[in-house]
Length: 473
Image 1 (spheres, rainbow, N blue to C red):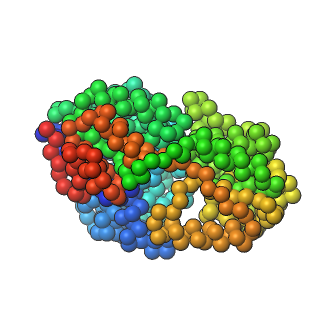
Image 2: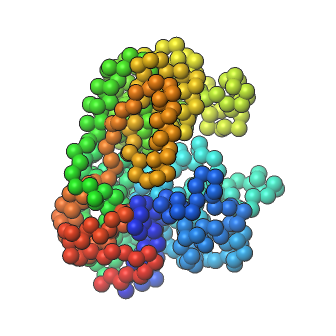
Image 3: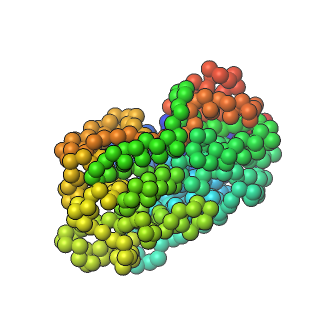
């Protein structure tokens, strides 16, 4: 008997935690942070208490209260007995937080299978992130962290990486990862061969990016498997048509840069290699330098090590590193002693300060996320400067509040707002076409707020209930 239980990704975008059981074998497909579930109870200044171990996360439904899954230290910290792991593996589709971050809570005896590039991304996040109970994916320190424990090395998780063409055997299951195109490299869908036939899991995908052939490869493999079940993402099932493409982003952004006389600010997710390539290309063609921060460098250096991605290293001649003002505010090297990811790169030859950029604004495109807008105080954009928002538009109340605050900054500094973006997810019309092509016996929509829309086009749709066990025959 094969069973599926959906512990996340149900009636929300992200947070996928899908338990697949086949005979004595148990695996999870993703184990992500559910932003929607978390936002129901918590915000920036009201967060789950790490002093309560795993307790706040279990009680408030951020994590499923199931046995044989979680770290011993977090259970005992909460007052529960430690448990031996009962899960054989986690298969991570890609390195976005809503699919990966709650691996942080899992027992270190559970191996994590992911793409080679996904592991590079997780390593980059680990290098430059402040240690937090919700982002200890690659390694962790046992909690509570007492003074005498702080010098002990962190506990490393076991990662086993794959690429398309590999087949991974775990107990009674054989998992076939196939690359898909998404807004982050190293993204995969899975064809899972069970004792009751094939199960297909899309992860997150699209056909309008720069590598649609990868998603086509996945569709062909999934179709060949004649799946009894398809677990499909449905982020944009309610979007009927969308002609936005990465080429369109390039054309729009290039036009904006060409008519901007002074500073250009660009805001995009640096995990998105396609978007980086777009702005790097525009910078080169327009005779500007692309200014990135030291956190960005952590990603870029790892991306450049994967020759298939074809991106430059952080010391490339068309890239500069923007040195942040910390500590004394004097750019003294001692100001960065607590920031190892900055400290180890202070000898780079391509480091600039905001003061230098301010003097020659027409020579730069600065990649600047909203959370670092206080740098505008030092950059002092001149009249005629532009801000290119290359991210999705706000789609919930919390994002709308942040968006209004962002606009206040732009208005204050006289920056013109422009939008240039394409999604990492397929619109509804494309999703329906690929499902019809794969032709599964049953459809389980996840990663969507509108699973009922699938019923408009398909009769074999299961509108999932969180925590319910679904048999696969």
